Length: 104
Image (tube, rainbow, N blue to C red):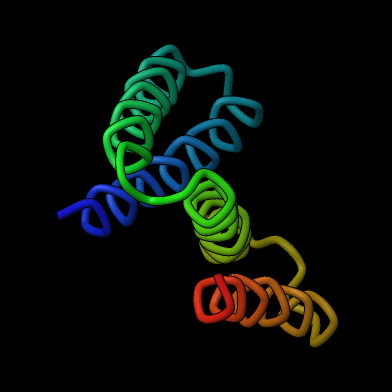
């Protein structure tokens, strides 16, 4: 169950980062509210997951999901650059997080 909490926390982080991008572009109050709700959701599930998952692994996975997922969502939704270099480094984030899980 803790891993599901961690995945939910990562999805909340992704949503928060995407809402932050939308808010910074539009100054829309709904986006601000969505950002706050997303981050509260994210931190709540991160807290729950870290009750049994080691902090180093849980935080790395949560950050990786948020960084990689947020970048991909912003590339898709806000038409940010879709260069090979960006995809390559996002891939490295994902591979690094998977590697930490297996050696941790």
